[in-house]
Length: 271
Ligand SMILES: [Zn+2]
Ligand SMILES: [Zn+2]
Image 1 (tube, rainbow, N blue to C red):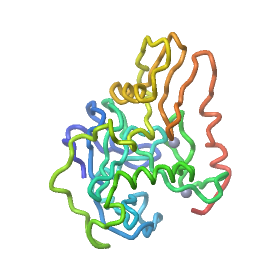
Image 2 (image 1 turned 180 degrees about the vertical axis):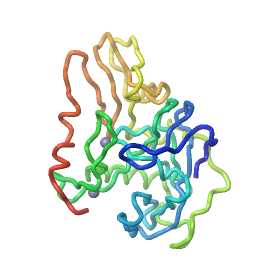
Image 3 (image 1 turned 30 degrees about the horizontal axis):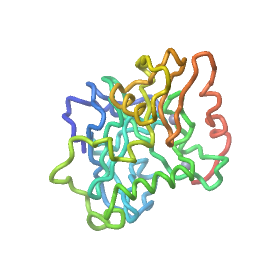
Image 4 (image 1 turned 45 degrees about the vertical axis):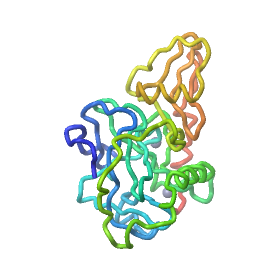
């Protein structure tokens, strides 16, 4: 279910990823965009071949299986440089804007599927087509990072982590009220992944030394952009798994060539 006015977004077909959700106006950082509604099922009991990628993990004891015939935030596609994230709230999974989202941008989310057991390989079924130069080639998340993320979810979820908001087979109903925005100051989960928009010019700053991570995060959220520090010859792309992604002007990092995308498509693993 969307929680923003219908004039703020549009659902349309994408080239490789089925339907997607696009912003039709700018959306401020922190805005709660929607609630992931569907049927409560046992964790990992959905058949992906039959149901598609419409299964959202809830607390430890349930998943939420969305109905693709109903329009909702389950149409938000995966990206390796996502601009939205999930916030666990009273047993519900809310989608919110990680940073300012620009008019025309596709809303995206890190699906963060658990890594295949063999961490050197990944599967074709979950190959990523997000098109970002920061693409890792897969919707899977390294096991180590997944565990860290799960810890953060657990903390945010509180008591709901071990409860079920209904019975298996029930439809998860909308809450009577929702927060309009997720405050970013106390929420650790918010600090995990954050990327400036690749389609926009970076925001320029005059700092003579690189600001702290907290300050960098604040600027990315507010501007929605990558950050450029001309006097340092550094452009900050974002933060992944708590690690700063940046590039020096005269260096050639060739992110796309160092990404595991090529490796990812070479091997097949059942997962
Ligand atoms: Zn897979
Ligand atoms: Zn990707």
